[in-house]
Image (cartoon, rainbow, N blue to C red):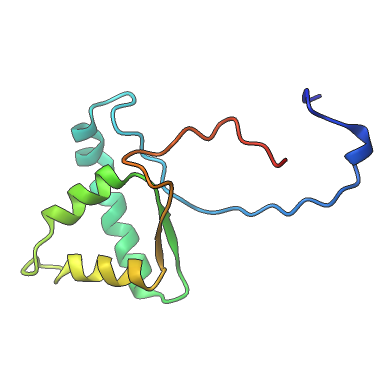
Length: 114
């Protein structure tokens, strides 16, 4: 039983929101560069393809360090078009949401519904 469990609250209704989001820890088990090269570049490329192709889709991104690197690698003459413009448009329209306000994602393992 959790330490803060109180039986008198057992019938309270709790609203739970599940938000799909990124969680790419720069420097956790590999270097930031290794994570970016092996995984994050492809994740961002695929997210952009999916989000741009379906106006109903949304995505939440937390690790600005990776997004900045991805954004700065893109150029208006890329084979995929002006990806920087696409990213800005998706952020401005709220279809990609930037959360946490940090260079990396904050630790959230101790969250509580209370």
